[in-house]
Image (tube, rainbow, N blue to C red; front, side):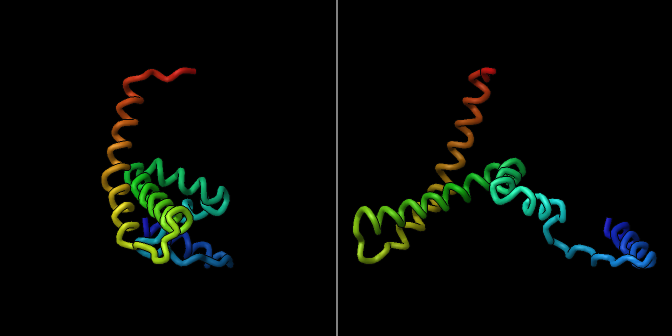
Length: 117
């Protein structure tokens, strides 16, 4: 695939066009970047959710849990100092316990209950 891209780039350069250098190893695919640029952050999130559902749900749960715990400490409890260890504990618990269990539970329910419509 890298040879094809290089050959296509050399053809374009030879025809008077400018060629893009081949993507670096590990770089995001151009179609994913274009998709994100055209459709926005929400579409990129949904794409990742379909590609890697468990990991995406874990990261989302951790971020939301950390944000919620921070707001709780500062706005509701009126803490003068933020307890970062508590935020980290809740984020890790959400990522590695709550998200996987809920992912499996919802998958089970989706198989158990027929969809309407």
